[in-house]
Image (cartoon, rainbow, N blue to C red; front, side, top):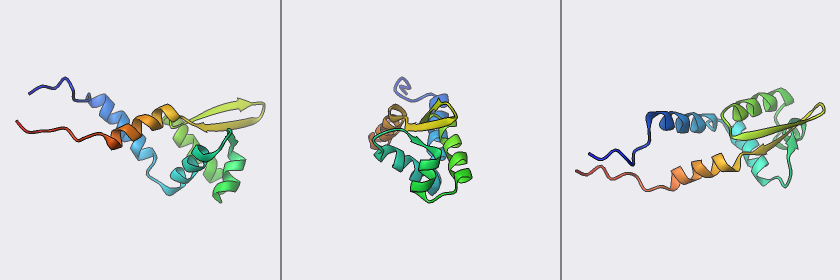
Length: 104
């Protein structure tokens, strides 16, 4: 069996972590807002746009940032968030790939 095209276990773990991070409507909502935004947004702006409280928004943004789905840039006392389009593109590619052919 040729395993040169199969992902390593570490890569699969990384992919699973990314998909798990998207496992709540709150995180998907925040990410959707960021993807549609024309500029970086503060957590306060995201809270207003999403209808979440600021603590809920901050917690969910932290989780998205920890796995690399969003970027944070700090300017003074404000943090601005943008989607990590490279990682999101990789996830989209995974969803559109043909499943491997396991026929022998």
